[in-house]
Image 1 (cartoon, helix red, strand yellow):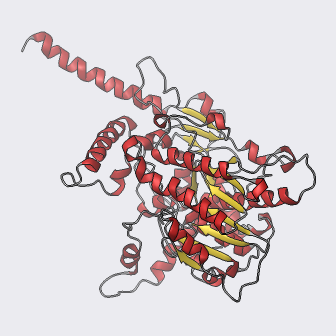
Image 2 (image 1 turned 45 degrees about the vertical axis):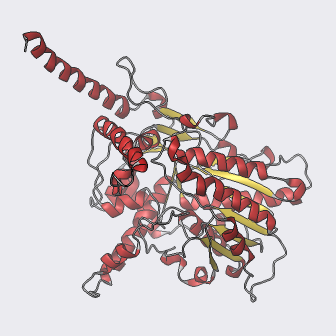
Image 3 (image 1 turned 180 degrees about the vertical axis):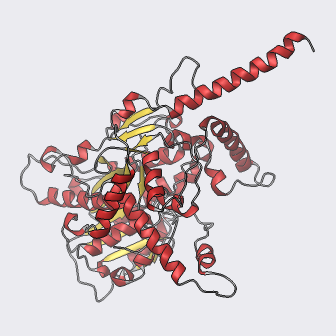
Length: 505
């Protein structure tokens, strides 16, 4: 081997290491444009003050909820995370539990839905992918002892297949069946059974563009590293390859169906809500809950700034949109804009936060038991691409290649496209008063307050499990709970519970 060849090897290794350092810096150094919409970081003192305030005076959501209507309600996906909270909020504001129906593929397993009035809410099993299954669920008679309601029926459709890690076009059918066909079936059957209001849970991730993190040497960061998401139609990508994943693509198609189904003349009103970015809270979220359950969470996203939506704010927004649609039918003032068939972004009160703020909150309130070791992103960005290629190959050769399972399944480029960008959700249009075409959305909870409540509920649940731990056929309570919550072979119509047994306040 010549001397020149020997010199090329260390030079090439140096350039490769330098490029990885450059990519890492492009992801972890926060641009000034992102700091502009979130200039301040959480402090331990501020976290402890918020937690102490909530502990001494628990937050009461009831005064913020729209008043009871006496209507009948069908919550499709009501056994899940957000759907379950909508059911609970309906009950909290005084709706008759016998006038509420949960339609899902499985019964509720959350403890806060297995006692009190929530336990009286009828459940009907159905699969949104099957229109006849939905028809059978709608055709079930309402309880004979329920208060007769001739005020109409509202459907809240929260069911979704959240396969956010898939972006290849060949995998679209895996999300399409629930997110698009399921929504179409829900709309069709709702109209057949006299539903007059239909509120759909969309996603603020719909307008999020794919980001090329492998930047050129002369770039400081990716062009789309900072994104401000709003609910204008022109902001939605038109090509599949522009969406961050198949989840966003199929939710966009479903949203178009819902918006296009709005028909004032036929008395069928619809609306969409785009919570963003992630919805978190007690009851089975995919963000804070898994962090708490795992304890140790290696991460590279601490500097990333994003908007979040506490689950009770999201539920409140659904009830608020229903109220506005009801008002539009009775209001004589024609100057009030019609908001039917629209989509509104929503998020928490206050500024967006960084993942580092979230990490500090969970670590502080669990006294260091929840940890977030920092990792460099570039090696995992490369690994994500390799895993995606294997994942696609496995779907085509299922008898040859074993499937990816566990957390490694989600380590694909789509995760970087969503969780490794700075994103502000602009919900200013939803916050406008109704006379200006808004919802009058004024979320009661800040993100910090929501995080404090999540940790508080989790610690209470963990303490209860510890106090009631007892051997049962050689297994502890924890191992039995883990077995009860193992993933099903059936696609969940709502986010799977990250941890169960959370108490409702």
